[in-house]
Length: 177
Image 1 (cartoon, rainbow, N blue to C red):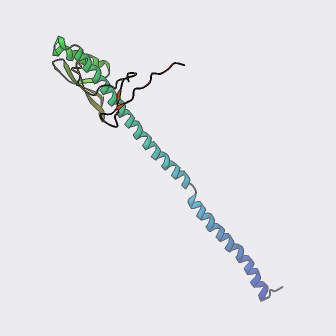
Image 2 (tube, rainbow, N blue to C red):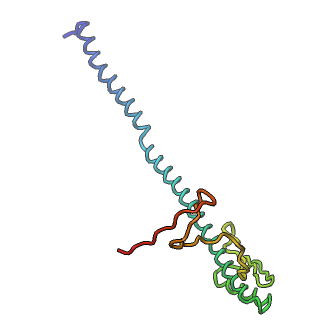
């Protein structure tokens, strides 16, 4: 049996359609395959960035701790030196050195001027090192400053702050219930 021209063309079209459709499907699959695994790459990149940020925060936290340790040790060493100023500069600075060492720091500088001590302590090593300076001594005279507000006296005339020179009427005493 021989095919007519029409039947042969129909058969060829039928065979061509699946090929064209399968080629389209293959190209779509190829497009999807090129994206496969990209979420993993992005996730690994995001985790790496978060790790770097976390490491930087840890380093800053360590620097703050070292700074506070140096400041606390300098304060205590200055107080110890000021407490022993009567025994001489060497003895007072020796006491400051012992206190600084007990705090895990090292004494960088110690000076005694009269009753006042001036001490610098250092803490940490390498890029994470900090120095702190502290002074200690007697309080000295208190400078005159504003006085504390006085409690109002019952039945006494009060000056009116809104109008200088004016006197407000006396405040009646409080009655107990």
